Image (cartoon, rainbow over all chains, first blue to last red):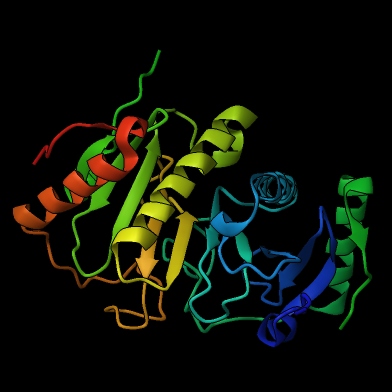
Length: 144
Length: 144
């Protein structure tokens, strides 16, 4: 039986932070905008192919991460999307946007410009996630 | 008290098809790709600000429209997104994508190219929605 394995492109482009309700939490390694990605540990490609309870658990995690974004970053809009045209593995983008950010009001997908995080900033985000999310998340520490 | 009113830009760009669980169903007037939009009849801007039961009802309608897309169009991927950087009124895009379509693998948002529907094609889609969705939807007929 095929097992879940994080897509190599997501692994390359993101920092793997931890795990919520059986959904991996990644941080896109682009400090120009706060951009999280949830990756349900499943083999299905589309959200709608998950059983209802699993869909609702993804929705709950979208809520948790969205609230974290609003509490900790200077953002005025959330962009939430499941696209998967390039990386088909099911993953949900949760991006905090602001009229001051690098590509507002355009969407972030397809924009080449990016600025990797410093280790210090990632550590700060990880620490804050730990404080706010508490038991809801298992943090892995910084994997790369 | 402020009442729900469909955003004028959505009204201009889309064909208003009907209403599911208190969510308006629009068809983006671009026949290059099958592109539906759900507009919950609420004043909140973000999905996560809706009460849980309302979020789940939106999720159910996303499922219904996604299945309709897969059953009736030659698509291989769903793109589902709540963005709202330009039109802030809460609305969820449900787009059927295919490697053969006009802007694959890029996202559809921000792409200027479009081709309005013929009345005949819209009528065909409306008829098919009526057959497949039955009681789940109140169809308005074509509003423009």
